[in-house]
Image (cartoon, rainbow, N blue to C red):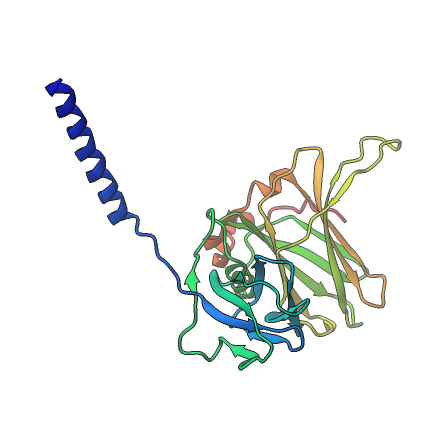
Length: 301
């Protein structure tokens, strides 16, 4: 009997020490929420320093809508669908990895209807950091923007149409994201205005009777280093970022660029083996090895 009591006491002490150590090495941070008033007659407006990626509200009786200003979505509008709605919580996630928690309560008279978190000295915010080893949207945009001046690291993927040439300068990988560095060169004297790009995966045709299956892929972010029309002899870099993917041998990743008000459209085929040659993002600023300079092209025309 005494042995059993001694064993139970020992187990209790060990568990207590383990839990205490876990609590010391894994502290839980409690974040205070900001109280906000919402009304059915007036709109509450919140302005954030980064683009809003997601909004979670605990009730459908309070509607939250983002407002797009130019190329940014940093403004959030809140309004109650009816008077005297129940209180609720709200979390706003921005693409720079931050979370803003709020407590929402109905009020007929709003003391403050506009909150600007870009100028507030303190705000209810916490850093989420990278989730599941993936780049944050803000990091993807910053990386794509900074790749415009990088030199070519891939040879052979190119196509041309009526004096316009498209070259895949490089394919890079970082934290679950594939970056495609493209270069458009205008060899004609007529300016070239890019309208839009289309990206998709399709099966290779094995016979004339084969039906082609296509799957559209939307880029996380597409950056054009020049928005104006491309003059004769000019060049423009484009960086398109996608969630990581691979394709089988009988499939192709298609890049299509369409001219605005013209027919000088470009189409480049990328095979699975080209995707597997993607280099770490750190190689994006590296020059081409001399032995690769004379490698013949194998891109689609």
